Image (cartoon, rainbow, N blue to C red; front, top):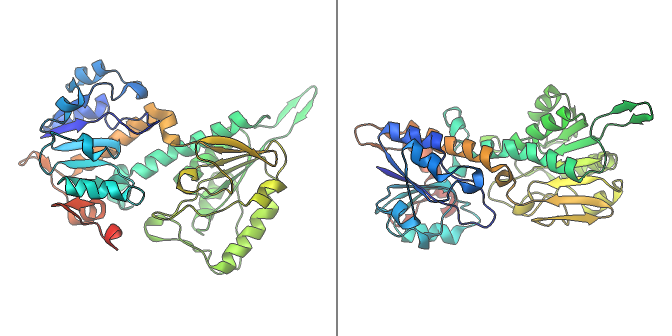
Length: 373
């Protein structure tokens, strides 16, 4: 069983799908590991470190030659995979809805593509969940990005020359990223409030010492979709939420938006009129900008100014903390493959619950129900 760790080809992607730590663990399972030269350079991992862990390091052709499992952060270009074993597994974040043509190409090439972001949110798969591990650090980085753009201090400071007021930070969307954003903003000394459409998050917000901003007595507050994700709200709820947020957002210095609905454009949370109500010098960080954005006017890959408010729309935020996010992503992949490793076959054998959830292609066809439906 040969496992190949490929160098990422996507523009701006600095992460890597394997580390010396996981290389050692895969070898301990009985696999051989090949790493494409330079794969870890942008995540502060030298080729020598992979070699010392027991991997062979070479060019892409040598890395792919006869490989049974191809590991990536983002889905590799199907045209670049020549030499891999017939029916090789591609295990990565594959963006199945956004890159459907690439999924079709994997099927045509005979690969078995496994989309790690389709991992079901069940207890035994928590350690395999790339969305959670990467979102956790994204929420942290969003607060640091806001602090870097905000021209004032976060904590209250009492000095001989007078008092500096604490920044007011509002987090919209309290999943993994939102909860980490709350915790980080609190550590920096901000006054933090947060909101979400899922009623279950109110207790989580308050447990972190933040103020929960919720619409009361309007149908639709449940907001819980399958797997713990948010779902679409009723029109009545949306109107009440917009009114509540408008009155609250005008008083905020920092707003961080994190709301995503799998397979659909990001919900619009902040309108141009709401941006205009904020104080000049305020900052909004839109973590959903690559999926269409929670903020009207946000531009992917840019920091823009509207009505005197900075709107931060960095692409691929996890990649901006490449060393740590690579370590977590790599462990997710190892935890997944090792959980299904059959010692007799010296290969992973998936069960139906997780296998059917994440398998996109098999036998030359697209087989995942979420793509076929």
